[in-house]
Image (cartoon, rainbow, N blue to C red; front, side, top):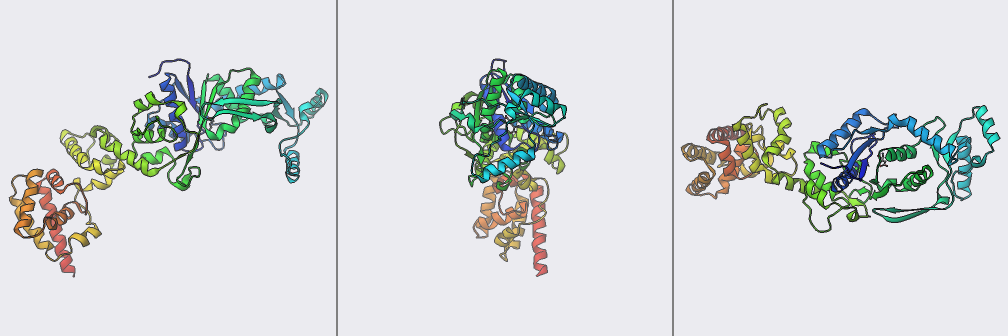
Length: 486
Ligand code: GLU
């Protein structure tokens, strides 16, 4: 797929939850950028938080990425396996004087912060450990006093160019001497990220806006270590319709849930690509290859994107109606098997039957699962008649007689295809002097158990004469029972 040139990007999820659609969009933008530039798209599992990380979630993230078609290059890197390297980097920063030991007790620091806050002054970290004498440090170490390592933020200002937000500058007096290694010896997130990005040879860091505030600190670390800086680009967050950060309150947020609801991966990819990016015209339906061709960072919006579920549904329906039946059957296969609607090895007749059903239902499907909800009567007798439809179409006293008459007539019908059935039923309606609707709707209900379906004559043709007559007989019996019950 990709030849190795200079661009190397990465997606770095923390396996503390399923793949969120926001994460999937970040992964997609990285993937599109890598493919567009013929670079590499790498994966890093940020699993240093042992309590919150779960290998099952790592697996589900892999599965979701694969399902979306976002295949990665090289083996994924597990951050938890690199703690020694991260510690070595902290040591290097300490030895070069870019970091220092801070012996302050957390509770003392908290007290200082509180009193600063009550005095209304900046509540930044503030202690004198940055210039402890060598002697003092030695005596603290001899006493085994616990310490953290803090980065010595130099004076001045950090300016960088964000590929999405443009020039950003942060004055260093707004950045405290932040901790890089905790008193238990574990390096912090910033160290793990910069070290891994450096060692993985990452050239472009494309990630969520929520990491923008980490960037100046990370740049300071790169500089202190004498490493080349990657390019940074921060993608705006995804909002719900109420313009608040997308969360479970708004509905499903994980890729898995959308998959289970019957969204096609192709549709989700297309939808996610347009959350905050557009090719610069009104074009909306684009497959992966087109996205790769058109993708560029300068068309990513600086404003948060709104997740519009109805649009996703619409897009899914477009993909379903354009998709070839073979692929749709593949997607539906497991469910169809579970329901006993197909056998393990689908034979030619079954395939042709499924194809014809799909041709009828595709234009009516928004989600893949709509097939399951709508196609039952093609595989089994309706197990109930929709109550509303019964009231609407079967409440006239003549219904049963009309159905019985129709049954008699249909038995005589010799041509059982759509174009013969239609005039046949319309003629029957004329003969008994009722509008065609008086036969068509009750008949649909008898055959499908529903008030709505694809064109009745197509459905009848596909089900075949025997089944249609048997279902009419059942419906007449049911209507009889109702009369008896009254
Ligand atoms: N693990 C971080 C997250 O899930 C990503 C860190 C990064 O991209 O630099 O938000």
